[in-house]
Image (cartoon, rainbow, N blue to C red; front, side):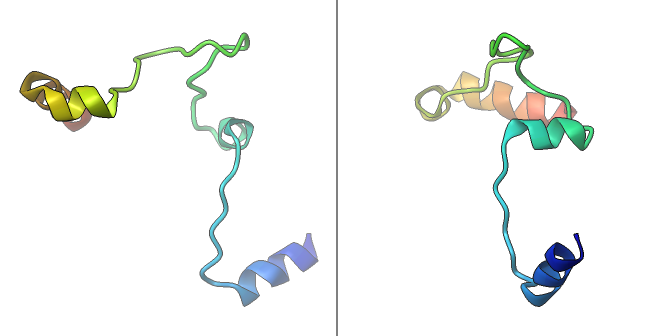
Length: 66
């Protein structure tokens, strides 16, 4: 752990991409059930966002609340 800490300190612009299990252990709710099926709302698709004024308004309204 000490060597990892030193590495991070030497690289202040370090960027890490990780998997979903890391986030759940950090307290961020998982968006999938154990069976790998999505839970909660389905994300908007780019084609729907770009192609529909209604979809864009709904997306922004939902994010304003959330």
